[in-house]
Image 1 (cartoon, rainbow, N blue to C red):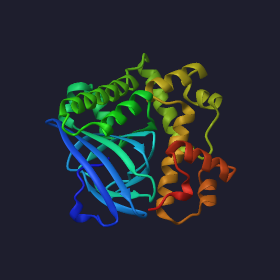
Image 2: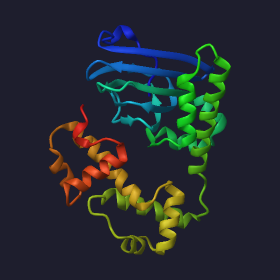
Image 3: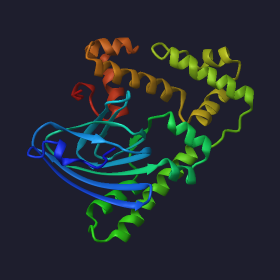
Amino acid sequence: MFAKINTNNNTTNEILINQSHIQIEKGIQLYINKIDAKKDNLIFIKNNFCGLSISITFSGFWHYQSHNYALVILSQAGYSALNYINNDCGKIFLKQGKQIQNITINIENKILLKYLSYKIYEKLKFSQTIANKLSSNFIAITTKELLSANATNELFIKARAYDLIAYELKMLNDSYKEPNLNQDDIKALNSAMQILKQNYKNPPTIQSLARSICINETKLKLGFKQLFGMTIHASITQARMQEAKQLISQKELNLAQISKELGYKQQHNFTTAFKKYFGINPSKIKF
């Protein structure tokens, strides 16, 4: 998510910014970021590109809030965030303490179309948040190598960046593989998704959901995962967490009220789910 940081627009006396920028090729930019905040602070970011942003945090914690969209990215050590960016600008909030070590690779649309099917590309354009996940061992090792690399060893840096790009684009291609489902199945599963989005506060059981869309439970569970790339439970959690993020940013309800609003019987269940999904306790988010 880190693009080129304009130090003229940021309080550099309180933030130590060490950023390297390398053009991997035309349409692919790599940013290697090492940032120290003397106290809780923020920096302003402007992303003058349309495409996929791969942001991998090796150490530290930060979160980004868009000025233009309902987009909030939370990241901490060991997490990778994939987001579709459309000429966005916003603020990155920094926590005092451990140095933020992050690499960000921004891939423009024209490059994405070379390596992703048009159907997958179209899905990405309307996703904003594509993934916020624990980094694999491969990602963690490659990120550490990039952070430690000598800036003059450009060939090595580009090679490792291409390794990360190839890995993430393969994961995207695999996750969006066309399911072996007929049109009636797809129509029924889309209906199931709509039911879950509308009823995430009090979701139906698998049995009642299958009955309502006229397919058996096995096809519902397997087909749902094939078509949407997530389980039914994960889709409910995603809907709840995205709504939670919005409610917290509005600052109109406390966490107990938000928990109840989202259908959780106990606040600690909401807190646990939120921390597992975003990697941070909801009480520690600042907007």
